Image 1 (tube, rainbow, N blue to C red):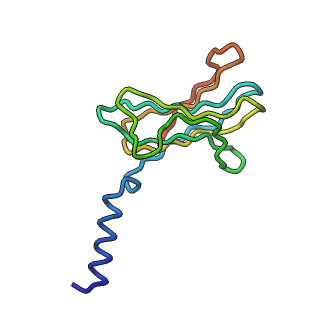
Image 2: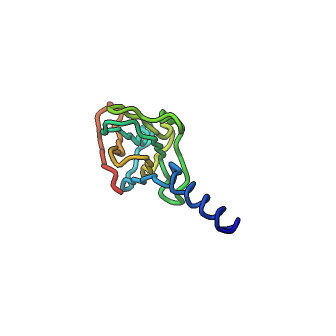
Length: 129
C-alpha cells in the first residue's frame, strides 16, 4: 500500500473514532423571554452511561450564541446519568432564541424553559433532532 493510501486510511479511521464524528444535535423551536427573565436551555442525561454534552442559547435573527452562563462542563467532562446542566441568557432585555444541544448519546432530553417574573414556568418546549 502506498504511503498516501496509508495516510488516508489512518485519517479515515481517526475521523470514525473521533467523538465529534458521533455527535448528535438537538434543537428547540423559537421562543421569547421578556425583560428580566432568561431563556434557559436544560439538557438531562436519561441514559445509563455518561454523555459528553453541550448547550447554547442561539439568537433567532442570526444564530449567534447569546448564552451568558453555562453549567455544562466542556469535553472531556461528561454529564453523569440522571444529571442535568443548563445554559441561559442574561436577565437584561427581551431575548428571542432557541436552544442548540449536542451530545455523544441519543439518551438525553433537552428543553427550552422560560419562567415568569414570579418564578413559575411560562413556557417549556422540548428539543428534537
